[in-house]
Image (cartoon, rainbow, N blue to C red):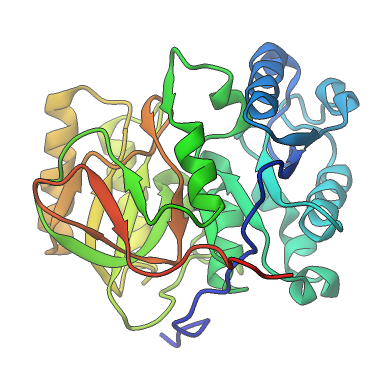
Length: 315
């Protein structure tokens, strides 16, 4: 399969001490998550961010589960990714529906012509992480949504460490446990179910290059047999052709089931599988720069970033 971008990630500019954070809702409805959203915004503001968010978006709903109709969500997202002065575009929550915005993501010249911008999200936002990194070559950041920031009892996330990375001051990602293997590759991945659902569409994941990739996978609310179905579809799509290893985050399973899933994936792929990625809907989370070369080292409690993730000193 022909790689879609060159080997060099296109870096967003580094943030300053008081970044402008544009919160967007391109996926699930917000009305049932308003308290967590507001707490997450307060946490960002306490860390020095200047948050831009239209509170009217909380009350918008379409189809019973989307944060507004497709046109509203698409316009907000593309505008945020191209809006002057914005430093970070941070997803309000996951849910579902972002793949419905495919026409807006593929067609607007203003998005393809825009300089890379920091985008943070996970779960359903895997669709956008995959597109921006795979098709446009941007470095994107797999990390908690704003509602996750507002639920510290559920999510362990070091916001200060994340912002230090985005300022260009840190070249390592703290982990919740020591790595058991030494693995290296360009970071890819996200939510397994979402990645599988994109197979066969213009938004599908595909190898960036022939260079080794380290695939991060997480999921929630899926039984092992459903994870196996999604995994089989993703593998058959060719997306994992350059995968040197898998790095599993939280799968919302007990310990025994998680180890059983890991063993099956190891057998299927014929590559190493490591547990403990700081990714998922609960537990340890961190910003993982998608598209950037990184290394896990056995016995160490940090992921080493082997190249810059932001452009320091850019205009």
